[in-house]
Length: 202
Image 1 (cartoon, rainbow, N blue to C red):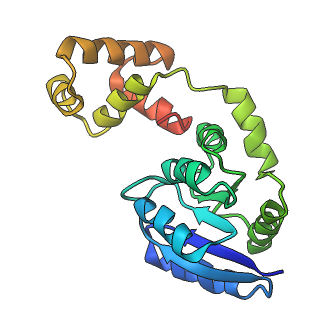
Image 2 (cartoon, rainbow, N blue to C red; image 1 turned 135 degrees about the vertical axis):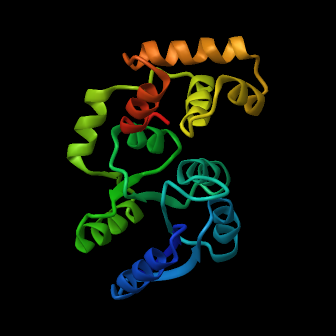
């Protein structure tokens, strides 16, 4: 049986290399390749892949959001998150979004091919060390709005700018920042951003 694949990664070199690598496998056929997360659903509709390999960081929609769209609109497609970021929080969010596999890009080619075959056969595939780290870190304590505020603060935005971009009052932004700093056990907003980012909560 031939397994039909969709590749989604914003780096063309990575997409081309992956397509060439996976094309060497007799039972794989790369039927679509896109560079934006908001192109994934249309490509799935047009090419009907069995497995979609999604990077996390893409323009339009990130890979986790694209996975959630596919879970709602094309549940028969098995989603594997293929990413540079082997972070525990990302794994938890990927599974919540409907992904059935999570592979880091520095994994051996044989491990990726094996993961694709296993998810196509109905299994879930997650790196055991990453799964253990996810259990150790636990769920993100941040609310959606606290995450939004930290994401905007990531670029060094002042409270007034964060408030303007998120259509919140400055007092509300300060409250969200204070809560995020407390929950990440840090001293200021930039430390909170760093810790939350390292744990895959953003």
